[in-house]
Structures are given as structure tokens and as C-alpha cells.
Length: 299
Ligand code: ADP
Image 1 (cartoon, rainbow, N blue to C red):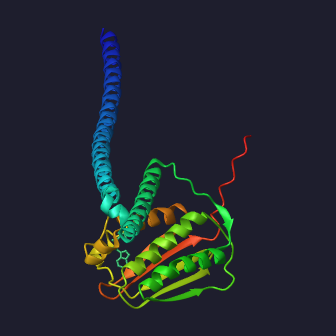
Image 2 (cartoon, helix red, strand yellow):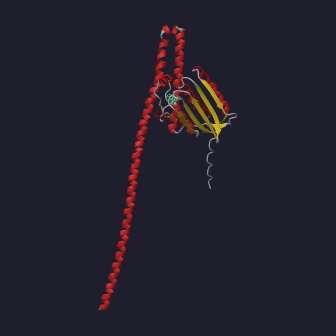
Image 3 (cartoon, rainbow, N blue to C red):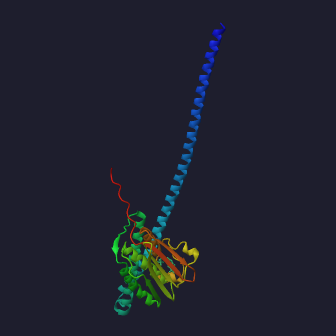
């Protein structure tokens, strides 16, 4: 009888042990599930935050695009209005008969249409950059020849403004593999700016090579740029409000585009300047673009 009872107690105890074991396992499983849920929840919150940020960025870039279109349209209107105005004047019989006035107005129209064409090209290039469809046409170029051409081209406006120029170009510059047209445009933009914003004095251009890079510095004795203005200098359509800027008649795209080009071509651009004390624009470009990574051969 007692034996029977003991056996039963033993069985109950085993039964209880099994149940405790089962409960412990269930508890561990529930705890694990809760941990998983907590992790999933955290991830969800993170994803939600990322989505919010992406939405904000999209909205901001939409606003920026609208702003870009509105400023671009405004800038395009200025030369267009001028061309339209002068063509109307030329159509009036009195002016058509006046050779001197006719010549003067036609020259203004020519200048304004060139400005319009440059503006359209700059805007197209910027939009190609945004769309990722801009092409860098790398080719082997005669660097010294390019520098000579730029020097000759800049000589005319330099003399017109009564400025002295000094070119310190390293002898026997190596041939570069780069986009000649873009490099030319960067140089012309920066040297033209130096001329535009220097009432008197000197423009110095120094070109040398170091560590596989072409290093260019354009220094002027002009009006200079404050630290605050330097921060926005490479932004699209940014112009420092001054009588010089108004007279120069640019659109504030030259430096933005130069920066985009330099970076596309693997270089860097920066400025050292002090208001009232002139400016130094520097940029570097690799003499040869970094080698494309070799394609992985299929096994
Ligand atoms: P812009 O066509 O108006 O010259 P940029 O993008 O080339 O446009 O230059 C932006 C602004 O930076 C100019 O409007 C001018 O105020 C300022 N800037 C550029 N270069 C110089 C310089 N060398 N000295 C002083 N100010 C400069």
C-alpha cells in the first residue's frame, strides 16, 4: 500500500518536473519573442524616421528645383528683354537710318545674345549634372598649349581694364588626360572673375605640378571676399551684392559650375581671401584620371 503510494508520489513529482520544464521552455520562448518584437519595433521606429527624413529631403529638393527654375527664368529674361528692346528700336525708321546708333545697338544685341547663350549652356550643364548625364570627355591634351591659349584670350580684357598680369607656368608641363573644354572653362571663369572684381593692380596665375596633380592658383589684388560670403560663394546663382557685381552682369553660375566640374574631374577647389585685400582661387586636377577598377573576371 505504502509502496503504491510512493510510486504515485514519484510519478506526480516527475509529472510536475516535466511541467515545470515545459513552462520554463515556454517562458524562454515568450521572452525571446518579446526581445524579437522589441528589436522589430526599434527597427520600425528607425525606418519610420528614415522615411520622414527622405520625405523632408525630397520636399526640400523640390523647393530647390522650383527656386532654380524661377531664378533661371528671371536671369534669362534680362538679356531677352534687352535684345527685344533694341530690336524694336532698330525697327523704327529714325534709328535705322542713323548708322552710328545702329552699330551701337547691334553690338549691344550681340553681347546680350552671347550672354544669353552662355547662360543657357550653364543652366543645361547644371541640369545634366543633377540628372547624372553630364559627360567627362577625357582625352590627352597639350597642357602648355592650353595655358598659352587661355593667356592670350585673357590678355584683351586684362588690358582693357588696365591690369597687369603675371603668368608663372611650370616649364614643360606634362600632357594631361582630362576634359580640355571643362578645364578651359574653369580657367576662364576664375581669371575673368579676377579681372571683373579687381579695380586696379595685378592678376597672377601660377601653374605647377605636384604629386600627380596640376595645381593652379589665380591671385588678384581686387575687392576680396568676406568669410561669411566665402561660405556661399560656390552656391548656384550666388552673387555678392555690390556695384561691381551689378556692373559685371553675371548670373552667379560660374563658380558653382567650376566647382562641379573640378570635382567631376577628380580635383578640389578652394579660396583664400580677405575683404578689401584681394583673393586667391586654387584648384587641383589629377594629371591622369585614377585608373578604372579592373573588371572582375567571371569564374
Ligand atoms: P558671376 O557670373 O556673378 O561672376 P560667379 O559664380 O563666377 O558668378 O561668382 C559669384 C560671385 O562671387 C560674384 O558675383 C562675385 O560677387 C564673387 N566673386 C567671384 N570671384 C571674385 C573675385 N576674384 N573677387 C571678388 N569677388 C569675387
